[in-house]
Length: 70
Image (cartoon, rainbow, N blue to C red; front, side, top):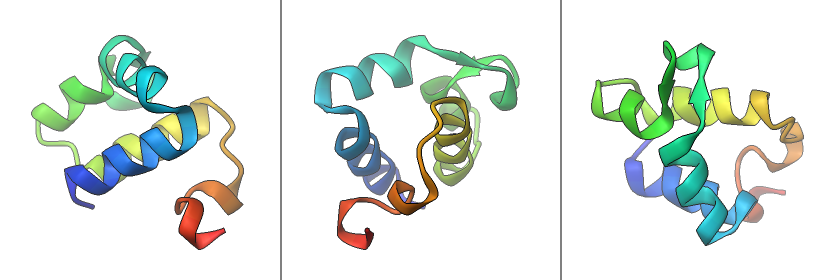
């Protein structure tokens, strides 16, 4: 997954302001105790960061692919 697609999915699900804050500030155990941004910078595929966020925030499977794929 490209970083731009990760950001689109984040903004589509959480809104622009909350998506940025969530990616910067929320620490996920599934990402090695890192934020999504830190994990991606460390080489974690954005797809894995997106999955961890979806799991943590109970994003329904129907919305995990984005608004166009619902």
